[in-house]
Length: 302
Image (cartoon, one colour):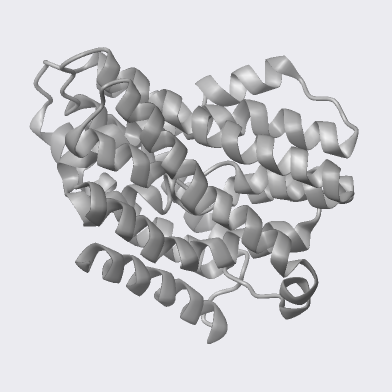
């Protein structure tokens, strides 16, 4: 549980810095850019260099699992939203945000704390091969659909293959089996170590609460979070086991697919004019609720 405690410490540090007026809410954007463009690429580079592939299944199942979790949550929320007559703005926010997990900013630090650094290779497969592709393609298309807008296929392709952590992951895969110059090895290790404190503090800076939203939309938010944190990882567990995944890779894959809703998905929902209040509530509340649920999944399966 020391990994969960570490996550809480850095989240609380970011939240307190903003509450005490030491930094502004917008400061999270600066930390986010440092993490996305510098620290996270170094981490994905090193994780992919250390990836041990015993079979194609060990790569494909973690990647596909993120899509399984997405399909379960998004499909259920679309169906329930139509049946209950929810507005497009509310349904869209629930679908876009709750269906994708925060497998990078929270997932990678939490997986490292729960399983150790060696588990980051599998966790990175779920994140870069799965969650990132989901949020960059399916989530954007769903947000545009519920907002009545169109999206550019060319823009989506560019965002995927020019995303710095994806570039780092590909470079790591291509450099496997080759020794790194000591300077590059040391520099990448030090930069990768920045992910845990900076990413979690950036998330902590963004944590806000809206009591009115929780009173009016609380049941919908709770239902969406139950799907994301309980039903989706259970479906992924059945899917991964059916394809023969076992041991730590199985536990890490399920834990990653049970992470809280992704901050980036919340931003996408807001940019397309979907319910900002519901999107914010899913991200903030989901973050706190997911810490014990992810820990329980990890303890049960490890």
